[in-house]
Length: 199
Image 1 (cartoon, rainbow, N blue to C red):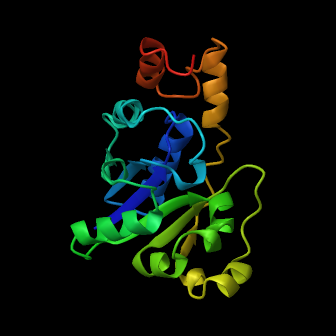
Image 2: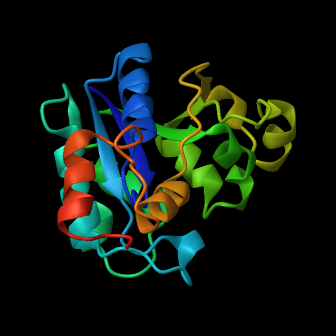
């Protein structure tokens, strides 16, 4: 099996996340894509984040009925900060080390990859499926190779989707009472209104 992994805070999950997951699934012939909400995102330790319960509920609504998209609670259930290397190691162990794992990330995140925890170990366990981010140039693989030897053989560049949707902008729009229906799946928009999130 080939498994895709898309991590994030998902506060809230939006149409861009779903497009990334579905594009990776189709382009790489993945058996499934796991969307993994962070318990305590390492880069957002001081930020105010919506409870895991709400973020998880919105994710489940977003993937309902979508072929081979699933939600994993692994990071939410694990105490302490969320590190990708721990998540991928856990998934590999769950699947008996038999699956090919593709970690889905944006070109902006790939640029910062050498700063991640244990990047050399991470690329030993998975491939990186790198997707474009508007305003970001394609990362220089030679420069990345100098910092993380072997990474150039573990990166797959995808050319779409080109999605410019920001979760923080969605939260701000919701707080102002503006419609976010075009930015998040319908059931997620309804959930946000029902639970008065971001107001």
